[in-house]
Structure formats: structure tokens, C-alpha cells
Length: 78
Image (cartoon, rainbow, N blue to C red):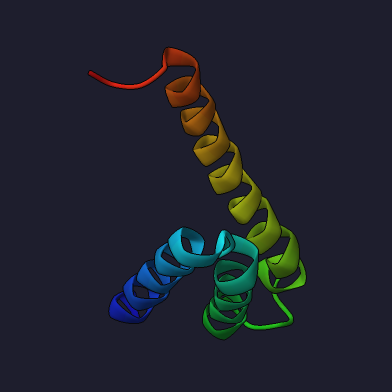
């Protein structure tokens, strides 16, 4: 299970670098499917699985945007 998640994490990183997207395109469906497979569709987590997947992707994007803004603000590294 962890190797599968690692693979999709690498795939999301690669598509983000190459095409500019990855979180919403790769991570959300994988995380949603994983949560449903582990906890079941009838559990509380199963009912909130899509919200959890989208919120996780949003947190990752906010962190990435903040890092990019800080690096952009500081100018080129010498």
C-alpha cells in the first residue's frame, strides 16, 4: 500500500513539474480511492473521503505556493 502511494506521489510530482498540475489530477482520485478502500464507503471517513482528499490537495498547494512566493520575493540565489 505504501509503495503504491509513493508511486502516485512521484507521478504527481512529475506531472506537476512537466505540466503544471498533479495534485488535483493525481492525488485527489488516489487518496479518495484509498480512503474508501481502507475505511469503507459506509464509515464516517468514507462519507467525508472526497472532502478529505480535496482538503489535503489544497493544503499541499498552499504550502507550495507559499514556498514559491518566498523564493520569488528573495530574488535569485547567488
